[in-house]
Image (cartoon, rainbow, N blue to C red):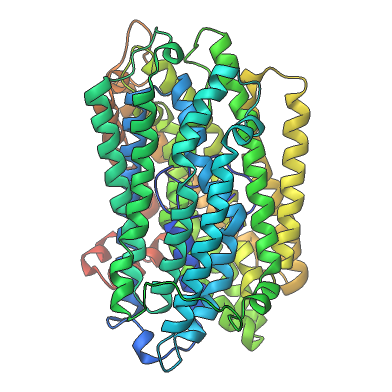
Length: 615
């Protein structure tokens, strides 16, 4: 699932990737994708005054946004790896902190995230055309949002203990007490997530896209500094001790308050570009005529979809939290994955989707919307077909690469203790389950955009309701008869299965409404890409074997020795696989590869030599 949240909260997901609820990449990384989607879909087709169009054009603005997103994601990887060093990859406090630090993000989405992302942008764009550039409207809107967010945050923080109790399964009183302590320091993030989102949308409506996308970089840098200084002061995690009994208040405050400071900085840095718009930062009251009621009615289906998706995420993660309790009862067995492990696996699995599919789909969305508006259904079917085929090459390669490299990738987030290999292996197992659903996840995301391009938010809501309802029913039924230790594998594996079910539903709905889009050619594209990726996978397996990727235990291989050796292994195997993939695509004369090279060579002419020979 995907969630339009201001932070890439890496948690497993199922269902709709269309903006209803997205599990994201880093517990400290803002939702750059959501902003890209909102910006692309809302402003892309809306006429605006010249003063509210990027001076360098949309292409330059898109590049600036994408670069900020990429750097933030890379920093999110570093932050997550450091957290494993500090707290352990499959250790108690890592899961407790992960719960407390991700709940604010989901609560923000439940309370206001959908309203800010879906409802406010159209109103802000309209206000930007006024003689004052929308300054009065925006000032009143910011005042209202500040009051609502402040009151909600105070109430939620006061309910920290009941929240932690409701969102965890079988946690002991000491675990709940520690979780509540963390939550008291992290729940204030709700206010600053909201402030970041509102100010960010104001900036987007005024064509200042870069600040919103680059602010998360500051957040992640602060988080990295907080974790690094934590390790320096309190030392790295060492397996074998009683982590809960040895934990101190100073450690709680340093991690909890430190991460909240990052979110605060992420929001407050946006005040600088906001001032340049001439918008007064003092409170301004009187909220009649803001137009929120009318816009809210239009966006109601999307808001309901987001509500269903995020409630589903909370309930899924509650089940996975039960594994943390059982691991503690089993003496801290590091082979049992918990919430941190599930989030780390999702962080990796969602990256190809975010880098390749999201960018392609954002471009194609405007073409879909235009064709839908003009009633050109033949063009609509062609764009659907072209989009799905475009995803085949990167998605199939990344799926095979993740399957081959699951062990070393898991080791990156396993920490540095004596239990790091077992922790990495636990993460790798979840990663394999997630990777198997990658092609269907991306296809679902794109087909959902088709409905949104036709201004149909009701169908995605119905599909999401079916998927979340089915997933929660299955997972909770199995939780009643299976041990907690099996739940992370059941829940994460179910997500990949649900992506298949969702694709079938979406495919049938699309074909019935707009006609066949030649799914046979799409399957053929994935088959060709799959064969080439499989061949590259054979090469990757051989290189990984040479680097000791299949040796663990007493005879530990190079790939498993440390985080550094895992990085080297991933780089070496990935490079070998990429080279083999390109060679096989050329030899097989895969047409999609030729199309991709032709597109890229318009900016980098040297890439033309990679094009497959003409038949």
